[in-house]
Image 1 (cartoon, helix red, strand yellow):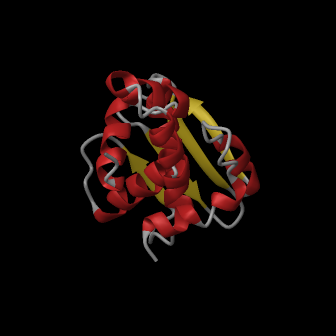
Image 2 (cartoon, rainbow, N blue to C red):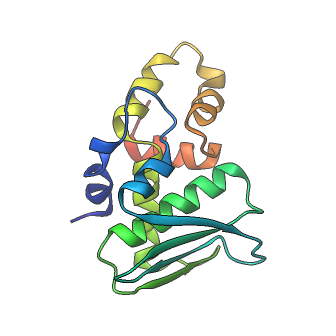
Length: 153
């Protein structure tokens, strides 16, 4: 199954009519503990064991990057990756990391919400990316990538 398919299986737990996607209820649903730490060179860590699953996020990141990192690490825990410990920092470009990024994009910017917001703000072409990024609490660069991926025009 593709990373986006794992994310879409979770849409049943995401209210599609009230963005932004709230990550805390999703983590609680899967009994994943979330902590913030003062890291210097990594964005986040995910640990999965039979007894506990934990995500630790760099508290020094901007809120939009924290949200993406949480969703990314959540993807590592949900998808059947072959490790129980993940350290994510800028520059890693392995298949697992790309899949976790795709998962995060689908969770934070679900296709149904994206289509709705894209149409809703069609008349505000110059500010549409800024407005939608603000509503979804994602970075403008992440949103632009998602717009290209979904081929929204």
